Length: 164
Image 1 (cartoon, helix red, strand yellow):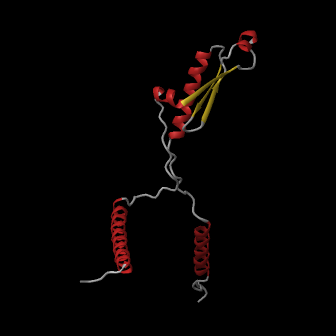
Image 2: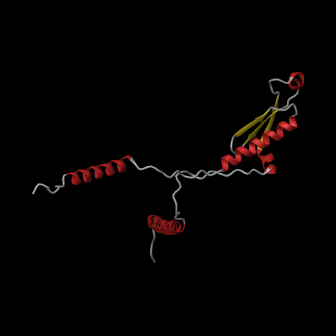
Image 3: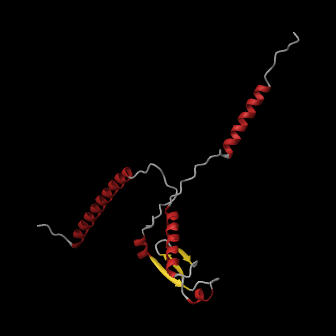
């Protein structure tokens, strides 16, 4: 019979762990290479994609915090007494809109929601990346140098003498 000491068993366990870790690394590298082949984008984005916010009124009602306050300005006693100003804070995007035009809180609330939807649509719009339309400075300088070279070459050509 073979007599195993505690050290031999520990060495065997360590070797098994090392082999398992190497196999895991090989599997991970194979998965990464497959992912790279599949996810190769045709166009490289210069900025990270931002989240598009919903403009659905029902969903907005759940995502916003509505605050009322006393609006200031002309309007007299009625306006100074009622909390007719409306401030809407869209929590996911951090957009804040207010409406204080009317003495009616309901109308101000509608106005504020219209403004919020407009701002969210503007925020959701994806800006096209700018394509440079003018030549770079280096390109312009190279073209001018080439023109000067051709100009001097043509100017130095000999014209035939008409006196002979």
